[in-house]
Length: 553
Image (cartoon, helix red, strand yellow):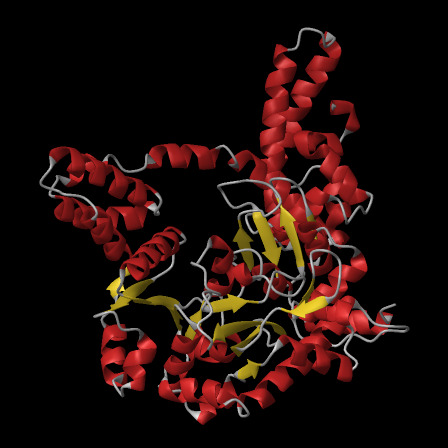
């Protein structure tokens, strides 16, 4: 079992923004962060994370909770599994009252095998010669903990001699079990190894490059509880300080590119795990709000990957640019040749993301052919529609120029009058929800409110008001209200002013309803009309609050 004190220490050491931000692309929204909810499909963000309260809440589907609850729901984990996954993510050592866990054992295996790989590198002349020929320095080898894995037999012997449990080594992706259910075999053999770390610096897997002309030049650890290549970037744990400081992140294609970029002083460089960037990478790319530079090879595959990534980043609101290295060279080759200044110049002159996408889309069509031009126009228009209205408006003239068409062809801008109308539809809710949020944060003001209103006066929010009065702090809508910055917590004077305006509107409406209601006895109707017209509304307009009278209901 996990020691309770250890769990509390873990909770105190993690930030919900880091936890949720590892899985969901968060954007700052006042004091909170917002995102599209990972628990239900939506296009308009309604998922809010509060760093001050260390909770999340979705206004669309109602889910909410803390960091542990988030991980349990997202990855369908039990409570202990979520605790262990968090500890692994943030390189935190849990204490167990008895035994250990698969997570801690897998981490121990990865750390031990990684150290062994490093020792093996210096013993293999072929592997060392390859790295030195590629221009990799000894300091880079040490900094990136580059190693070498020998034969499968030697791997198995090392695991057994080190008393590392084979099932946990399989959990860590170091070995695998034969399909017939027989013995184990090593996954990486006769390869130069590049250890892969999480953003927080916990080892989670390895990448391996063959030096025996194996058809698969590079392979990675398999998907495990610790390793998900779609959410990892090689070298990020070493680059993140520079990324946050310089507000820049360089994405390149391979492990050696990252090593050589760092060796040349470009310490913001990272790389994917042999796959193109996907939306799952956006959360880690967003951290620190850097400018993203895509530094890819200039071959056909590199251009295609750059176009796909630039399209995705542009639509996600990132700023940045694209560098395509000429003449079939990659960054590692240029740096190895001592041409770091040329690399620096290329990075400085990166093509901005949106113009790059527009131009590359158009290059795929013969614009002298009317039908091809029409298809290019459709593709560019579709791309622009994925951008915000302001950004779209800014780049429409460029798109029109590249295509050779009139800007007017790209259509009308957003109907702002409609947007204002939609906003006004919520205005009637602001007073009631503002009052409720204030009472949620300042319960000492509840009596002040209950003295002048009845719960029923809150109509569609009456049940929510009742839940607040009954202290149901875990009520999903109350949790949501607590993190919704649309509604501000008021001081006592502000609360009284809002109450007064709310009551004026309420009694005006009630007066009209009473006058039109033929079922109310004449004497009762006369009393209510007179009370509202000559007593309640005049007092409210003079700035006084009027005690609630149940006879007027």
